Length: 264
View 1: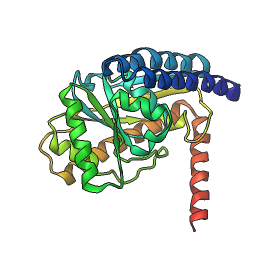
View 2 (view 1 turned 135 degrees about the vertical axis):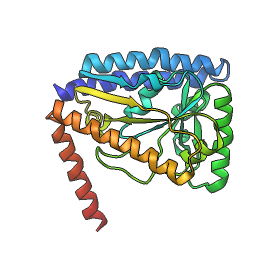
View 3 (view 1 turned 30 degrees about the vertical axis):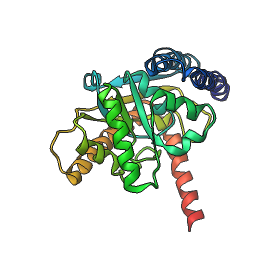
View 4 (view 1 turned 180 degrees about the vertical axis):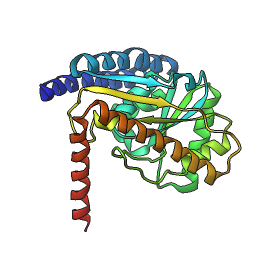
């Protein structure tokens, strides 16, 4: 049943995504950006979330909703699966993403995210790319839009972390927007490079905004500590409530060992 439910949801879920991308690409030149955001966040994503719960038995719990800012803000989120890239903006209203420029080359999807107002970044562009990102981010923040950024720049397994990239510190130091850390446990239920959608409860937890006035090193250390400690708590809670999630964790460990053997 897991395979059938996952297959059924993926057909419908990606069908919604494809329809939304194609439709937004067609109307993007003729309607305000706000209308495109509303179509995505208030309609398409809501239906997708309902299908995810109805078909796969996978629901989403939001914690720390009091820390979701009413206007301009920067959300620094853990990145474990594609799930958060689909659904975070349905909880953070009028939000958009900073994402790698390569994604804009995908037909329809790349066009749609541009019309949505997302900020593509050339990760090999050095200081010029950082300045371009900052300029576009300031424009969005001035419009009272929120920005979501994944500080690690890539997806990681539960319990795994990589070096946090300096882009988030650059935004923190050069804007007045509050920076809200976000922890989650999505990788247990929506695995990277897998079509399976496991039943259970995804938890997305927003935390108190970072204090202002920190130097770069202190900010990065504190941000990473807050996100990783909270993710560790969520991992333990998930394994306690869903013992079957241990199997998923073991699969990640085996995958890592295979990669190490190939690299060696």
